[in-house]
Length: 345
Image (cartoon, rainbow, N blue to C red; front, side, top):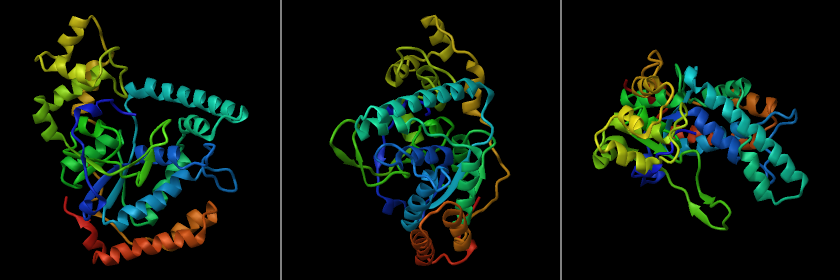
């Protein structure tokens, strides 16, 4: 879920047309969970094949990624590696949340509650296993889209690639990419069109948003290390934060020029593994041996059809149409060879 520090940033809305030709390192797990959460039937049941295997993530990856490629974006998906040891507690808590949500979803269905109520519970039950990850990577590679496996956290890897100049943007809904030092972050790529506000019959248009790290740090008058302190005080994937401290209160505390250690001492609070967490945000484990320059290939229709249609019961007509759009996008941009789809490292 990342750190709840979004209120600190200026998010500039943009159009997909303005992102044409830009390269984006997508936090794969973050994006896939969005698809698993949102691509469901009215009662919250995810899309499944004839053998009961969930396919919502594959549907999202095929059709949304095709739309983004058609708009001229060049994506690379970054998959999580081994999480840091101090994330174990968060992982266990998420399992408990999913277990509780699953029970509430079943109760909602059994009691005949509205589809909206059942859907809300269902969204929190999303699970991603190794087989689903393998299928996702195979699909992307068959579509001609490069993948990178991070040493640890996908957002840290995406931030490294953006800071290293291998891509222009890190792409994620969370804000941790900024804590890891991504110069530019783009949000809302996995969603599009209109979104219904929770518990309201109001729809709003969802557009991509761009955040510039250094611009916001200058505006806030803080350093990236102080931003990390704020996030830790608020709560991250690696610590629960301090009760009663949100992003804005955390900002006011660090603006006084005190270290997080001094702040915690004054509050008579402590955070387990504080030094280790700070060091991980500042100098995360990343893979440096991924292929450079990044290369985008043309989709292999036979491989995509074999995975989605033969293995997972997708409509061959719809899948073929998506592949045709991918091919047309490549041709329209005059990128008929792999070298023309490369980015200098």
